[in-house]
Each structure stands twice: as C-alpha cells, then as structure tokens.
Amino acid sequence: MKIAIIGAGNMGGALARGLAQGSIIATSDIYVSNPSTAKLDALKNEYPEINVTRDNRVATAEADMVVIAVKPWKVVEVLEEIKPYIDYTRQSVASMVGGLGLEQLGKWLDKGDGVLPATYLIIPNTAIATMSSMTFITSARSTEAQDRLLVDIFNELGEAMLVDEGLIAAGTSLASCGIAYALRYIRAAMEGGVELGFRADDAKRIVMQTLRGAADILATNNSHPEAEIDRVTTPGGLTIKGLNAMEAAGFTNSVIEGLRASTKR
Image (cartoon, rainbow, N blue to C red; front, top):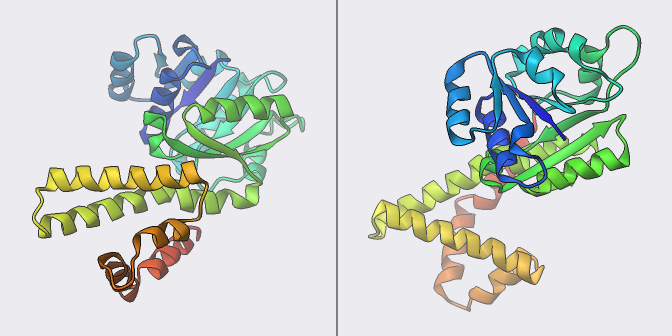
C-alpha cells in the first residue's frame, strides 16, 4: 500500500516518521509533499527512502491513500488542487484535520458526478512519531477489508480504535488534546519534585517512570484505577492525605472540565 501525506507539519511529519518505523508500509511507499523544503529535508535526512516533493499532485498520483494533514484553512485549497488527480475507484482519502466531518469532506471531494472515494477521518496524537499514539478512525464508503488494514496500520503506531463519527470529538479530547493534559501533569509533578528536593531532570525521570508503571499495572491486571489506588492507600497514610489534598484543590473536576471544554467548537 502506498500512502501520500499532504503536509509535513507536526501531524503529517509525525505520521510519516511513525509509518517509516513500522513494518506494514514500506518506507519507499511513503510520499510526503509540503510547500517548503526544510521539513521535507529533515524527513529525508532521517529516512532517505521516503519520497518527498513540493508538488501535492505528484504525491497524490502515486498513492493508494491520500492523507490530508494541513491546517484547517488550507483544506479546501489543497483538495481543489489534487482532486482532479485522484481516481476515486482505486484511491481513498483520509483527513487528519481536526473539526472536519465526513459529510463536509465528501462535499469538498465531489467532482460533480456524485462519485466519491472511500473516506476516513483519522485522529492520532503526536506520539504517533514514537509509535505510541492513540488513534481514532471513522469511515464512509469503505469496505471492511479497507477498515481492517487501516486499523492494523495504526495499531503498529500505538493503538487504534474504529469508532462512530459521533465519538471523534470525545476521542480528540481524551487522546489528542489529552496528551497535552498528561504532559501538563508531568510538568506539575516535576515542579513538585523540585520543591521536594530533586533536580528537575531527576524529577522528570521519576514521574515518567511512575506513569509508565501506572499504565502497565492497569493493562496487566485489566483493573479499574480505583482498585489499584486502594492497594496503596492505607488508613491514615501519606497517599490518602495527598489524594484528599488534590481533590480539595479540584483535581478530578478540573480534568473533567478540561475534557468538556476541548470538545466545544
């Protein structure tokens, strides 16, 4: 399968790097286009077999799937440029643009004859570059085999979930915006660690490993977080004092309110 990525910014570049580290898509089958050369040169230096070009039409013509990874205000311009070069009978189109729905994407792809390609919304997070993304996928006019292949591709880059379009906004909040929220927790815990006497780099190392451990416990035991919390909260102990102080400061409510806020358009 050949994949063209239109846009080599944060998400497009991260996708290209993640795919290049996987085994399903050959690096030589990745095509990336971008208007400026600096980001293309950086990709080429890291992965010489990736195909790069400044011409979106060249990248499009080679692909089985065309992935749009540009800023929202550039989508219409890019689609108008490339859609005459897309064969809807054999090529699919995917968008990584936040806030863009399948219906709108279909309208912009319409060439006037009512024929449309298999179309996807793909919402990863920036950890896709390190093959650790949580990616949400929804589709229109696709086959089960096409869906399965796409999920397999993105499972190599972390974990992927095929969802109804109505859950894309929630998935974006939990995982795409959510990675920033997790990083903000790490920063806050680092600052606390420094106040407690650790050097900043050591505090970061400690917090990162602690989060890995917490995630691994839940994955291994298939347990609820509260069950694991109960294991480390002894009556009158330090952990419950810390948890109660965090809750008094609004910890859980602030997380929920942040997630709600990031689903609003």
